[in-house]
Structure formats: C-alpha cells, structure tokens
Amino acid sequence: MPPCITRLLRQVHPIRRPRGADLPTLRAALLAAIGDCEGAPAQRLQRQIRASEHRRDLWLLRSDAYRLIALQHCQAIADERLRELLHLFGGWTVAGEAGRPS
Image (cartoon, rainbow, N blue to C red; front, side):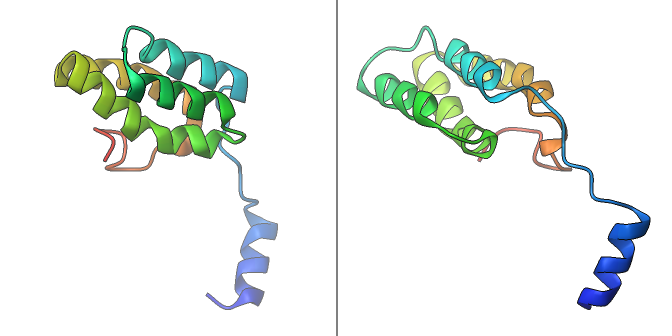
C-alpha cells in the first residue's frame, strides 16, 4: 500500500497496540509453566525467560517451553499449560497461531 494511503488510514483508524499482561507478569507465568521441569534444558530456558526484555521475546520462547514440558511430561499437559497463558499476551495471537507453538 502506498505510504500516503497508509498514513490516511492511520488517521481514520489508528493502530491499536495489543494490551496484555506486563513483562514481569508474563515472565512469572512462563516460569511457573515450566516450574516442575528439571535439567540443563530447563535451567537454560529459565535464564532466557529471566533475561528477556520484551513481551515478543517471551512470545517466541513459548515453543521452547512447549517442547520442554512435552518432553518431561506429555503433549497434553504442554497444550494445557500454554493455552492458559494465551490471555496474558492480549492481542498477540492471530488466527491459526493460538494453537500449539511451532
């Protein structure tokens, strides 16, 4: 779309940023989801979660959390735990992305 049309559309319908939980809340929820996982992969993921500086970083770490939970417990538990986190991310989910993390 040409820049002038994009600018015009933003004036008419401003882009709304998704609202969700703040970074510390997201961090705590993701750490809780993997809280009973053990070993070096769990410790590495915990460090990555604690070091994340943006909500998008945590959104992208969902797939690592899913993999870790599925390996140490089962896929059904991983599905359940990460589905419970979706509401915290606000409008970050898009059609088709709300299922299993890739």
